[in-house]
Length: 304
Image 1 (spheres, rainbow, N blue to C red):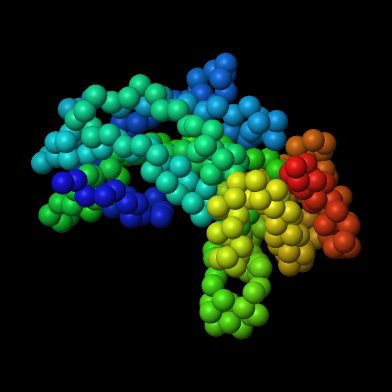
Image 2: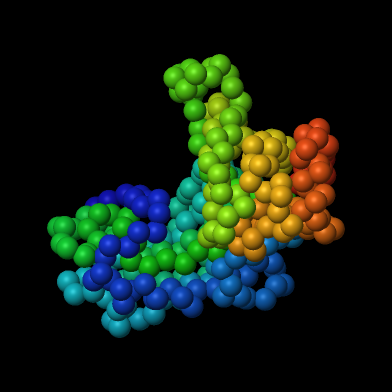
């Protein structure tokens, strides 16, 4: 009996030198976002709200012949092609499909409207195709050995211009809030770490956000409530980050091009350009900054 697949690595650390030839085996996988849209091999897409209303994604798997990259001691039947959806904000991750690599592989995978509704309508959704181990193996240096270890993967990221990706979200129970010296029914708390105006990697987090687990679970279980409340919560979180970080960027003429602040400014400029001065002047008066963020993050539009 094949062991249940599970994800074992939250970060892309690849200590498996024996599988280097496998890492490019999925590079030709492609995606189509809309019913009559073009097929693309791009991996990152910035979409507006109207785009998500029309979203109808289809993944086109393409695996290089395993004979050309299978590591020594591995057979195609030891591996499987896995299709996974992940939502960083909702902390939800589901395996949508999987098939042994020795079987006939699908030519396309369609993401249903029901699946999209579980993942905030596709907003900030990551769709990953990976080649993973199907069963545990004897540990060998430089070789994957635990079910779920991946040999190759390709991820398509559907980014919402209305929801910044500045923060990493965690949950807390009543007991965890109390242990952290907060009231038990705290809704959320922003723990700013710094670096908003520093050059960094794409999608670098500058804060950790804790949300009460009861509220989080309710948002996850109710697609309509999650869609409506997420922009409001994002506006409040971003306001906290901007207020706490103001001393780091208040004297800048322009943010460094690859900084999280530059990315945020770009996201807030989706409908009309926004200068750094405009954002700075608003943050000096938090009530005005809240109004600005509510407008730019489409809070009212999300309430249906």
